[in-house]
Image (tube, rainbow, N blue to C red; front, side, top):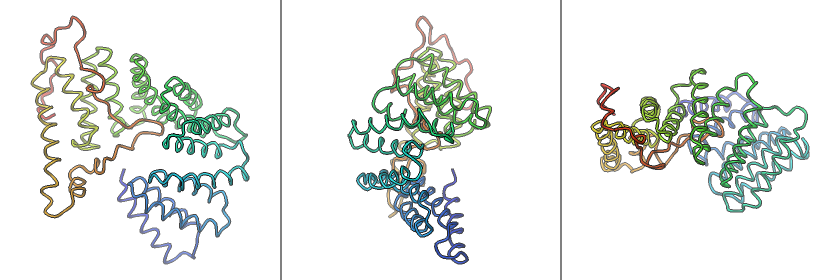
Length: 383
């Protein structure tokens, strides 16, 4: 994701509007919404909010009521990211009023605002209100108005499934994901989205101990991403790691090692070695090598991880007056301010689990670890 370059290009576009476009042009408003999206992705929520407010003012001046409501939803999202929950509720309710009056009570736009309100109320601990908004949204998706696309319904169900997962109701979440996948399976150009849903299902199967189902879901998602040419993305690396974890639980240690090795190669390129996801894969691979009897390789990887962590701790002290955050950002740009990876398709976890979270990686019963020898050992000595 080249957000810095995108931001610079968008700034140039806005400067062109300032010089050549008439005041309050719809084109400038659209570009400000794009700039807000870029700023939000970079975590610069205050700047995103500023661009959205300016865009909203233009839309109001041009009588674009529905566009104003859509921007209010985006403003509510920013307020929620800033933990300004009362202001977020106000923005969502404004949008809800407009959508209901202009599109009807059963329009998917209304359902999408219900989903946002459900998420918000869950975050502030009002679980009854959160569940109520979930149910209201599902009623709309169950009987969609004419013109509603399968993609809109599937997207909404995927978001609601995440909330049910937060309620610790994985079975209900899985049902929604299965419905979403069924809606998309015959739609062209949706393979990556389906892969994301399958990956999410794999994570939930894993959480409830259905490791065979988890592995099958991960395997299907991996196959789709390979076929669509997305085999070098950070999300693909995370997915391979999750598949490796499922293989560990099924005592398929050799397969797990292969997936961890491929995940390591991808994440080193996409996220850099010091990223938390890459370090998670290093740890998993070390534990797997240990279970295979490749103790020296396991030690070498763990020593490398230790070196990375020491360098990250020492980096701020070499800044000569620069702030700790700026130096850490330079050393590990993907982990500054505790950021997590955001490359996963919608509804998909971007976190990387480790064997430490799920139990020690052990060889199958009756299998001699030392008997594994060093078969298949890579000639590359760097972890």
